[in-house]
Length: 169
Image 1 (cartoon, one colour):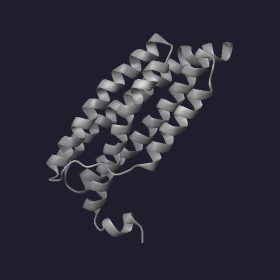
Image 2 (cartoon, helix red, strand yellow; image 1 turned 30 degrees about the horizontal axis):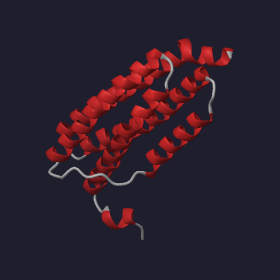
Image 3 (tube, one colour; image 1 turned 120 degrees about the vertical axis):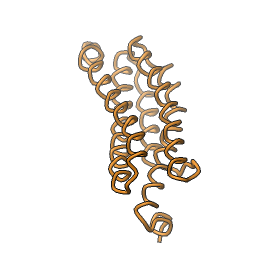
């Protein structure tokens, strides 16, 4: 049997594993965002990525708080999903020459990351409540709300300006 089935026997184990998964994901996102900031050509997109970098640092701190609230040391486990999303983003960005099209590609990649995080945090909030950990759920909900807000900002940017500029080229 795989690592997953051997180490996870209870809902609490599953909750902790998911925390470790998203902790790894957030750390990988922290590493990827500076490159996205450098590649973005739209000043608005650069500013949005910079803001999200700051938010992500806070999200990592919140996760560390949830680990401690739950009586577990913060630890990351490899997350092939986020690794794949980031790898694909880097590959696509490396293949785009036109700066407006590149910005559209960066938004699409950022939204793939946001959607992944939304699924993870939504699940964690639900599981925390199920486990009677409303304290943990409240902290995780703050991050979930930020992820939704970032996704909405990216959509607004794409639909109002960036995608139109990319299509005009």
